[in-house]
Length: 77
Image 1 (cartoon, helix red, strand yellow):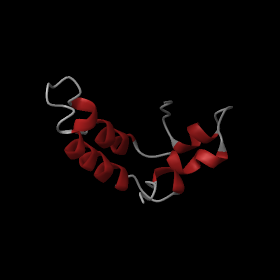
Image 2: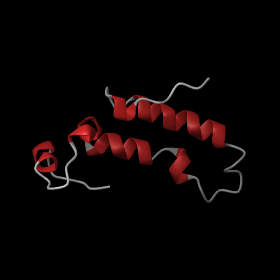
Image 3: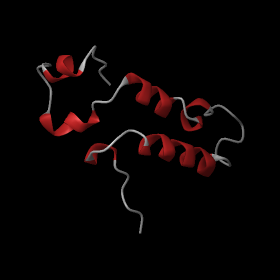
């Protein structure tokens, strides 16, 4: 992951891919995502047993990441 100071900074990066433009989000949103239990509780002995709970929290954080195809969760059939 590359962290830039601004959206303009990211867009002027030599390796910027316009197809990934909707993945540019504020750092606070990435913090909320990676601060979810899925990432913070990995060393707990009951991690696998509580994984469905953790995934729900993570999906909630992802749904707050904004509009755009990059952050849309796939439909589960």
